[in-house]
Length: 155
Image (cartoon, rainbow, N blue to C red; front, side, top):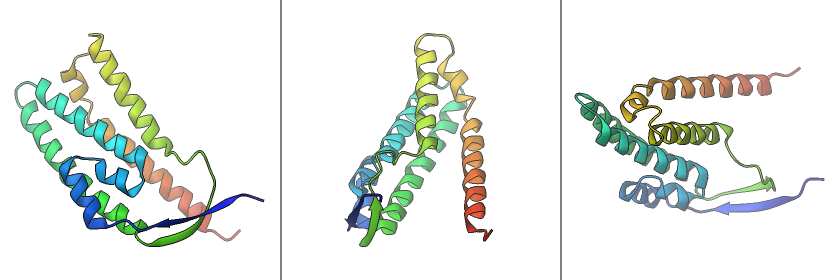
């Protein structure tokens, strides 16, 4: 029989959003989603580095991406806190509560920056790969949708 633990979360969604407005990702630490908070910090830092290293119109593109991501992460943190606000649940004790998607995303970002530091690729070259993020998110959502459909069938 699996061991379970009662989890009570009472996080203020507005407080979480304010913390994320002060510094991206911190509101997720408050909510308890540490991996997602770290991912948001890394993504925000990566966008800033790409904006600083950009040439020509890259400054404008990455500036807009920074602004869009900044606003997105505030609303996402608010929604995350709202989903967990005051909820009591029986949660199985599982040491592997890590999203594979975010783990792979962090590894890919780390590899790209390491390649840039070793002068194998340039930051500008990495900046041109941003559509891969959209492709990855699309694959993740298709996979999540297909899993939810399989689980909902009565066979």
